[in-house]
Image 1 (cartoon, rainbow, N blue to C red):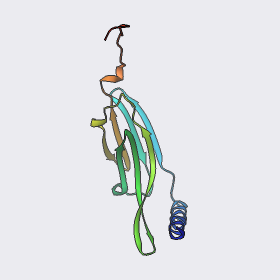
Image 2 (image 1 turned 180 degrees about the vertical axis):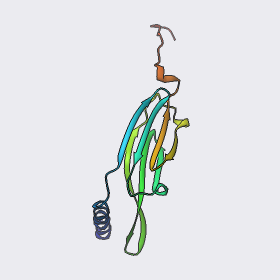
Image 3 (image 1 turned 90 degrees about the vertical axis):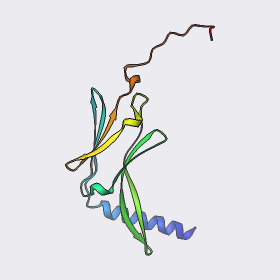
Length: 125
């Protein structure tokens, strides 16, 4: 238990040191006619380090920082964006690409984006 706690403290210390000279990530959300767009710019982080994942209907954008602790190399994730995907977004059509130094995640609308409307008859199956 003590070793795990020391590893955690080492990781926190390294992350604090690394972030001391790095600018904060910039996240911009845009609403467009065909969907939404998430733009992420992280100064000092290479595009190869950036990751986009969907897990349990949550969209996560993060980057990995390699850390060495007691001779072991560990990739520590730093989350930049982590939000539940709304029901009116077509999850299967989400795409990500880079434009200059900015990660762009496209979230296209699905057929539910115009709303769902249905009259329900009471007492009928």
